[in-house]
Image 1: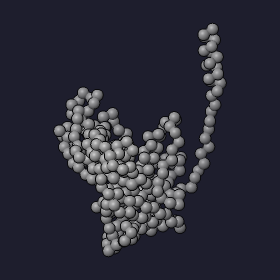
Image 2: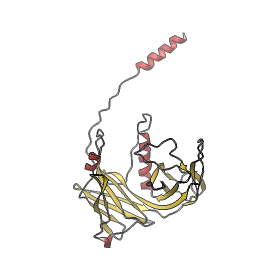
Image 3: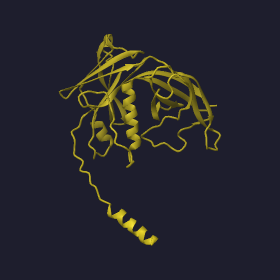
Image 4: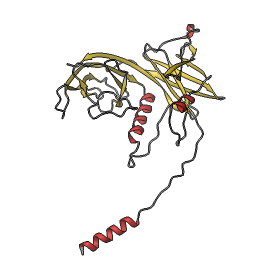
Length: 291
C-alpha cells in the first residue's frame, strides 16, 4: 500500500511539470549613466549605451558602447561647469572614456564639498537627462578599527576586521564602505551599503569583510586579511538616492542565477528612462596595518 501511495504521488508530481519558454523581446538601447562626486574630488561621468540581453560581452562591444560628443554639465548651485571627454587606456589599443573637469575652463570648475547638493544635465542623441544628488555632512565615522583571528580558519595569519563607531541619533543616515589592501584598488564590500534602521543612535561593533572585485569571483577566504597587510578603510556617508541605487543593484547582482529569487528592479535617479545613477560620497579614510 505504501508503495502504491508513493507511486501515485510521483505520478501526480511529474504529470504537473510543464516546459515554459520565455520569448524575450529585443528592446531599444538606452543611455547608461555612471556619475559620481566626492568631497575633495572633481565630478566624473561615464556614458554608455545598454546592451542587448543576448549580447556576448567582449572588449570590442564594450569599447563601442561609450557615448561620445555628449554635452555634460554639473552644477553646485553657484557654478555650472561643462565637462570634457577624456580617453584612457583599458588595454593596449582599447580605450575607455570619461567626462570630467575641462582644464581649459577652470574658472567654473569645482570639487565636491560636504553638505552640498549637485545637479547633472546630459544632452545626447537629441534627448535631455537630469539628476541630482547630495553629499551629506560627514557623521558617524568609526572610533577605531581592529583585527581578530578569522573564525573557523586554522591559519593564524588570516584576520577579520572590526569597526567600532557611534551612529548619530535620528533616522535617515545611509552609508557605503570600500577597502583597499596594500597597493590594490578601492573595492566595495559584497554588501557595501547599509542604513541606520537597526543601529540608530547606538554604539556598534561590526565586522566589515574585505571588498570584492565582482569581475573576479571571490575565494573562500576573501572576507579576511593577512597579517602584515596595509588596509585602508573608506567609509562614506551617502544620501538616500545613492543608497537605493546600490542596495537594489547589489540585490540584483546577488540574485543572478538564483531561480528562487524575487523579481527586482535597479532603481537609479536619472530622468527620461536612462539607467544608472549620479552618486555623492562624503568620504572618510583610515589606514591601518594588520598585526
